Image (cartoon, rainbow, N blue to C red):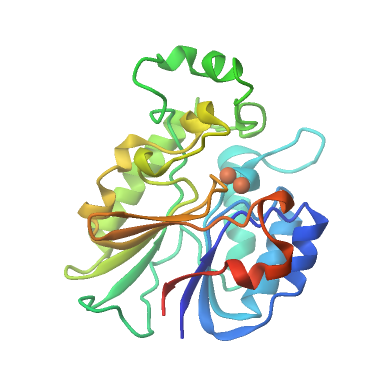
Length: 274
Ligand SMILES: [Fe+2]
Ligand SMILES: [Fe+2]
């Protein structure tokens, strides 16, 4: 029985979709899906339904792509879209950031007495930008190298006035739940589409994309909430970084050009606990 993780399946691609269809069943394992499954609500729920039938439990957090609302599609936007996703996904038996935090029932790593998995939806507040770029210039600065995230056009924060406000509201609620709902003495697996620390973001090919990658307000969450591991995606740069005693796992599959098709998706399932 293992706790596995992947993110950024980007199933609008037919190559990625076919690879998902070929994924073998893992009846004993749990799977974390850390966002960017697809853009269409229907595609997201079909994929999670498929995975829920192949793993003992699936835990999902949204990425920015799930939250994109194209005006041409008659789908909800902003907080209403997130709510619609959660409603659909819960009916599949998949754990969302709005559900009680599941406790890992499998074998525990050494020194861990209890492991609580905390799926989070925290967004970003542009604070991963360099210190010398003012917040009101951040989009213009990123535009100079064509690194502006499409969220600027497609990720509505409604009814919040900005993605920053939505991010800060999400942070406050997550902080409350992590403080109140996790028994003392537990370790956690913190799951969020966006990485929790600026120093694990290494994206030399799109260096000015960092403002859309997280918030400095979570820099110490791995310490505050005793994280055994922090699982994220979004960057499409698979890697493992240690910060103190915590493993920071970037678990993206990514677009077809970013992974070796011969390995299949199974070759990219990262073992978090096993
Ligand atoms: Fe992605
Ligand atoms: Fe993303």
